[in-house]
Amino acid sequence: MSRSALVGNVTAMLRDAGFLVSDRCAIRPKSFDVAARRGEDTVLVKILGNIDAFDAKTGAEMRRLGEYLRATPVVIGLRTRDEELKPGVVYFRHGVPVLSPDTAMDLFVEEVPPLIYAAPGGLYVNIDSEVLADVREDRDWSLGRLAQELGVSRRTVSKYEDGMDASVDVATQLEELFEAPLTSPVDVIDGADEVREDEPMPEDPEVDPDDEPVVAVLTRVGFDVHPTDRAPFKTISEDERRESRMLTGHSEFTETAEKRARIMSSVGRVTRTTSIYVVDRARQESVDGTALIEREEIENIRDVEDLKDLIKERADETPA
Image (tube, rainbow, N blue to C red):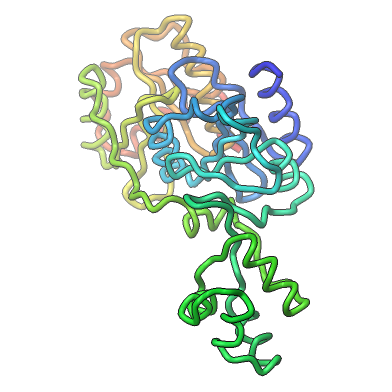
């Protein structure tokens, strides 16, 4: 399957699942392909045939964007160099959860979350530690007795009851021994931090020197500005109350700039984020809801309210 067809299939699947889906981010470099929102759940989705193409720099960017846009970064892919991705398993690359299309279909359409995740050493599941302790005590088994049945140490069984996850083989043994379900799903949207690779949140990249005057203005009027590295926008800015967020682009107003502004508008509608594009000279007031602001104008902005008023005047629509 071509990557273009795969992107089309995943996008259609998300829409079928009731997500509002952004336009495809078709301008390089790009860290994600589409943003999608259903209710309060927002995802940034990267779609790949071979997930080995997902590098550390893109993973870091997706995690930062997810943090600032209140979204979960997710990769949907078909295979690695060596094998097809298994259905029902969550993989991780550079701290980002990776799903096969079948797993994504189960999660988003059928609302059946995966039970298994891949980590160094094999495949693992979340053991419901309280249920395990209860069924062991109901059976009147000691930790030592259960350890003997499993062929592990008493300390290992104690760790399972303290919340340590187990291999698929051990989980299967436990459920067969006690004839009860003991596993809990991997919460890809809200709880992936609990099982993913133990990596700190990546630091923001340096500001592009060309963007420093715009960043200086946004910082002066009270925004916390986060530069991006591989996104269709140059920065994500948050007001001091963390109540509103804004995507910012900056360049000459070319055909490519107009495409970026359209993508920013589409992503903004999904992420409930306003967007502006700073240009040397504007030929129109907005592009699909992204306000166009000339560089001289933004340099004269006095405070956040001035900027919000200008955006409201220019933008012909606002995020849903």
